Image (cartoon, rainbow, N blue to C red; front, side):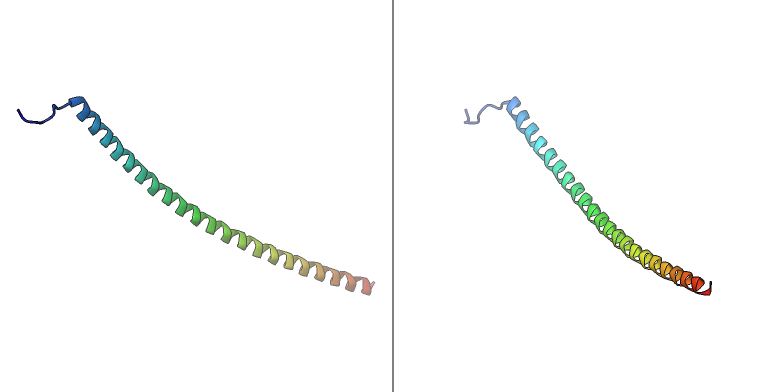
Length: 86
């Protein structure tokens, strides 16, 4: 007789099942990492876009404030001219 140990089908099945599970989990982790990187990339893009919009809003607020002050000065001058005529 040879020195080959008897084959335990249950042990073979368990080893194959664990290996398949490890491979499946590894693939799942790789897929999750890929999706995570895509989400991080999109988030970075959205943050940049938001920063641009905030800068545009600040610029526009300054423009509006300047325009408002100009209008107030003109109205004040017109009021003074009107009072000077009367």
